[in-house]
Length: 163
Image 1 (cartoon, rainbow, N blue to C red):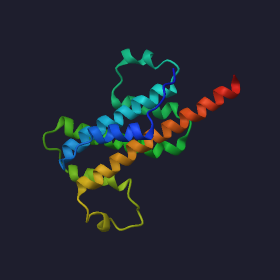
Image 2: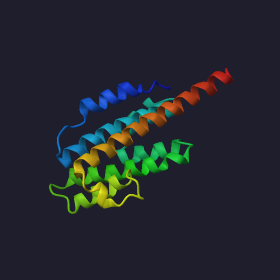
Image 3: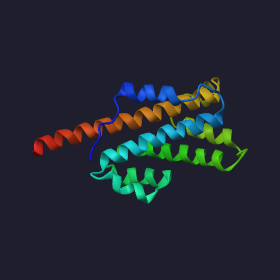
Image 4: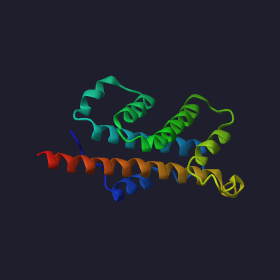
């Protein structure tokens, strides 16, 4: 059962409504992870003919990310899924530790995935880490919804041609 993914405006409005205005890295990672997890779940639902059959399985987030990877025929987007997995790892560190060791270093590694590697890191580090983290999560969330929208559109055209 393919559902209609949210429009760009709907997903952006949802993101803005739920993403924290705070500079607290813990809150940014936790809320950002929830928004990314919603995007992953929506994408899986749009890839499967009967996504409700999975409800009883209670897959954790990492398993759902891997399921999405397995369902996507487009390997071009595996880099985005790698980033989703890294955010999931960050989330787990915050969820299971009051004060995770070297967390800022790990966040730095995550945000560098979204920054131009040809620009020296010192240029990016002039901006506060929380701003860079917010931008990275926002970009990743947009990517997931954009890829999903494109995939669903292509599938709809293919179904029309086969009908």
